[in-house]
Image (cartoon, rainbow, N blue to C red):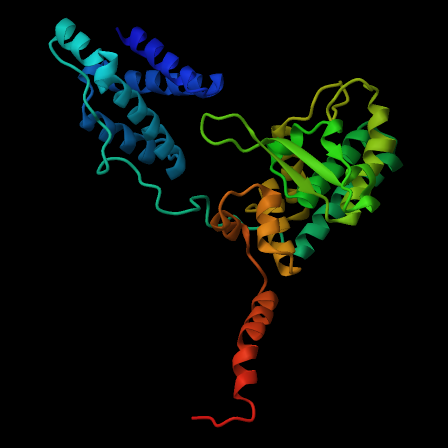
Length: 344
């Protein structure tokens, strides 16, 4: 009966167009919940959800957003079971003398109250930190060349990856999945040549849906120059001309997000930079620095693929100088209006 329930739920989700990996992950979670409770769905109660949530919090130490997602999956499954249109309630009552009930309620599940639930220590690079980091990445290329050791191509590739993450405000997965054909010309910026627009095909998906696509316009000359040099002079030396990936490994594979993270951590720790900095901090810095440079907020929002301005605001950590300048501009009309007039 339990397996039949899962098959029915799988079919319901597939009919809604959800991705296979989403459906499979949800089924695995329901099986883990079943193993934890040692009971079947027609025996589950709200107390089981309470105990499991406490276990995820106090013993597994999972992030609030992860726990909420897990609770949401259990809620979806139990709502499917108690829906009279699918007949599981009557089938279980006839077979076992009991039936599934709703076990997830507003008083025993997490509510999404904040736009941002990540670590409060997370922050963008300062301009000085970013310069140090990118300079260090370039230095690794020079050292590899001088020593004559293997790894020169990989070091150059990784330095360009970090410049691309910042230069176009990308996530790690978006960056790792880029192909050569994802670059295109922007008729409004012909000086960038074939690198005027970046077509991001694997943007962050809404839950269960395919990856979202967006076009990111090139805005930083030096970043375009770095990518062009890599594509035209370095990437061909990897020796896999027919491979579509922008970032190749020396064995002809595609660089993975975990590999980007590992190289980032090595460089960050070698420089003694704060451990709060991650590859995502470069994306945060992209938003922050463009904001400080006076770029339109709506343009930045579209560049990074945020549906809501509130998400872009979370990414923005402008400097004190910028805040003071903005304050001066905001107050200027008031002071200007008071000049030469009577003051109370």
